[in-house]
Length: 373
Image (cartoon, rainbow, N blue to C red):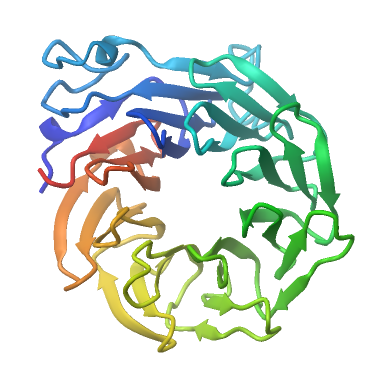
């Protein structure tokens, strides 16, 4: 068990925290919330019992940045007068640029924004007519890709915020987008379709149909050759651009599959992990096209699953308020943390070193734990 005294709690958001992301080059965490803000927090290298409250850290920490309050990136000017049920400025998604110098945020107001790591608003991208649910940098950090409820995906020039190309293939909201390489990407939608698109092309270069309900998440494998998808139809599927039919059709979950991730460990067998509302996490061997383990400990829907950077561990977060850390090799439960009154968990994210996990909770907290404790 990871004790509450060993958890580092970032408090300040006043509504649910949808996403959190470690800066790839530093110990900063960004989080985004239904309170109309994103926040950038500095986390000390040692998570001793200096439990954070309002700002960051406490007297026990030797890191000078740890005493600084978070940077608050406001997406709406009139927060005080805002109706509690008004979602128009919820900040729904975020991602750091590969060099860690810029943060992209997507908002319910339809705008994409790019901020410096010091919290300065650099660009506002206004073209979408509906909320952004996915916003991703390419590997070079010179382009951004957004997917919106307005059914479209847009590639943007990250230097000036201009539209490179707008893609209008879906017949319903776009739920997720993922870059394949510097010039092509995939998008998925509540219309049950996946399109692989390429900059400069006027129609999709591949079309995948086969899911029977909305598609929640898509992810290319580390080499960009295979695409994983998961859906409310209780299945996950693996696709190759060379074939309209799925290479794998994973059907062992009994409820909606919300999240899917590839193992980064490419020198071993190709593995994907799925997280489902049936409470289970499943590991699948893609080459053998079969489930090799079921990690069943959560009692409520599992929204979040992510491999550690070395691929040896898996972290999961559920609405049962538990974070579990599993060994991929022997399927054992290595560590657990109970969030108590912090509510359900929307996302878990490992830092680049693999020695810390951040999780965001429905009751406005972000928690950082050291899985080695």
